[in-house]
Image (tube, rainbow, N blue to C red; front, side):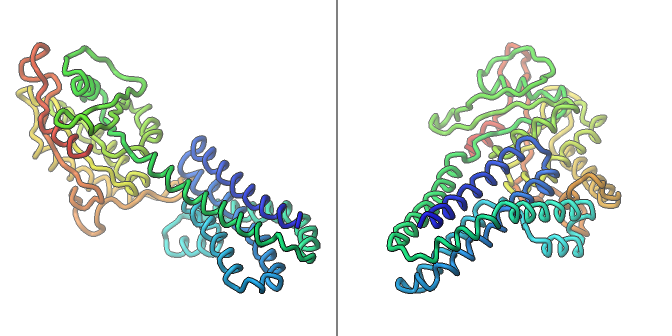
Length: 380
């Protein structure tokens, strides 16, 4: 009986350690290194503990006949369910990794990294579990009527873990609206106007700012506005930190400087749109064409047309370039292959709105962003 208890405890210990390793790796490593190395290493190690689980089932199978095969099959199903709930997209299978490579879904460097991580996971499992297996086998040969209570406890623990994951997922629902854009696009002033309604002098941000925004028409509806730095050396770093929490994204464009900044704007927007997390979550996207109070400002329609043209050019250029060896998997395809890009091809809904954080009357007047406020009300 002691061996069976140790076996069950050891299984959940392995799952817990692997889950902690995934969370830590996701915070410390780049998405490529996490997806190609850490995630596969943890998944392979965890999956290989099935050797322990299946051997345990074989040992208790004849004894468990008194309860019928449903006990063993239920236990087996729960063990697989725990794997599926915690793998976070890892295949932990060399055959799957090779198949992705042959189908040109993964490059050579990414495939090699996954295979090495999977081999390391299997080697770690063998070293940790094999000595434990013989002791477990000897303990299980001695019938013990208390084993049923242990099985029920195992089922209860597994169900608790799955329910906890479900509740945590609900609690951590995406509530953030990210304000993105180049430097001097007017994000910080827009952020301040939305929250206070007042004009204030701003400067280039070097860190994020966040606050709860409550919809004026419904005070119970709210989202968290997060203003991210637009400097080239900081913007992707902060996007990486907050993208998973994004319910929506407001991409702010300087309508006055757009003609000379169009390539830089399109480059940043392209990086946002091909991000795997953004594609998976598909947050609503608003292109806010700011500074419409200036006479030379470009219209939202013209900005949309120019962006679609530049993004199409970027897509063709990037797809023709060789994949970097240090990129754990190439970028996602933007839009529909074989067709000129337009925003309707994206998985998220994209809208354009004209606005002015400064307002037509300058510092003393009100901002002009009624369209933005209506959009935020729908998002909230």
